[in-house]
Length: 562
Image (tube, rainbow, N blue to C red):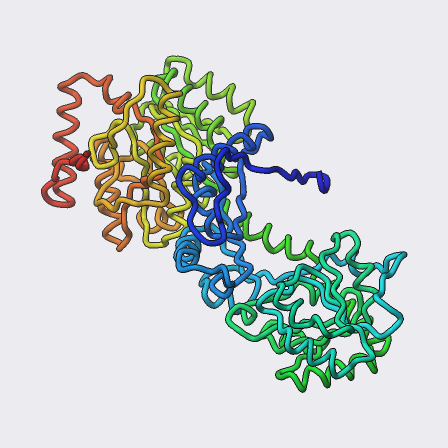
């Protein structure tokens, strides 16, 4: 365990290691890693995971994690690396579109990732600002130092030129280096290669440098770079000379920025001759202190909390206690969204439902019971719950349903990603419209497996339709306040969902079925108890009222199932 609360683990995959820097992951690799993540979740009791991705090729694995909040931490311009491929660029485009949060570390990256949160790099200030007991130096001569990767973005010609101009100085390069760079400097005795060093020993080398440098080439990659090392150099109070990267231009008060080789050499001479007054050194350290990683973490934490608004799940009940128990149990056990409330609106049940929900509410603060003295019907009962709801998003959920892992995050994610969506619903096993998919299972364990198989194959997909059934429907408070409550003239129910969908679409919003959310549905559990003639009478009455409002009602239809 590197630190308290941090566990370092290795994902299991009994297959040859994939090249995740050059090409997409094969399905077998994806499934193996997803299973390994699921074991990790189970072993550590992870309920509401947040998955950070820095390499776009890991997107398919992260998206399969039910209920996971996917954060793309965009640190680099991937196309600028020698390993960059068209496949990587295409995968990054998908990730930028589909991630719940996109973080960027520079203004250049933020320009290509519209809507991202710009969180620049930072420093472990307490570590880098504290001079170690032992300081390492390559010699007693003046030292110009650099640490980090010495790769194709590193201007080796510039460092060679500096070493030749200042033969009385040592140029200390710390980090893994391209063989070509080492070969180019093989005859320059004052360029000293230290190789990689442990992080715990890094400040011993840093404090042995008189001047720190960042000699990067200017290209598409570096123009999007916000070097971590500059914050660390400054936390130690060191003078810094760097090439003119856009992000370093913003630090000109504390960093000497050079626009060409001659300027860089002149800045090195000046920095070595004058490391700065004590106030300048203190200014560098004070500036770095403002950029401690804890402050960056606070920005990211705020963004994560902003993606988990309160959701109010409204469950209408009228008897059917066993179905209500199954529904509420699945809600409480399988909802891996961390911020929701359940409002059970009971329409005068007489089978023990009220007592059961009351006891449940006393044990779990997420559950609230609202009782009616008579059966008000579905529209009026739903409206009572909607008026009492505190959430930013609402879900109307029938009590003859069983939820699956990831269901609530999935519904809300689509609404948050597209402001044009007025309402969304899941796919299901049993309903009289396009939401029904071809799926078979004999119990709830098999249901969970079948549901996951289907939803993983349809991640982030929507099927746009004219109407959805309200056995499970999600919409935002903003849309609700524009559309208004359900029309209570539909009495016990039937056609009120079609009516509400029409009202939503009349305001310019779209209606969609979320292909990556599955809810098991018994279908017409309450209406099934009505006598046949009573149901037919209610149907005809409500159909007539609907057609007075909207014209001819066209029956629902199923999707084409192959």
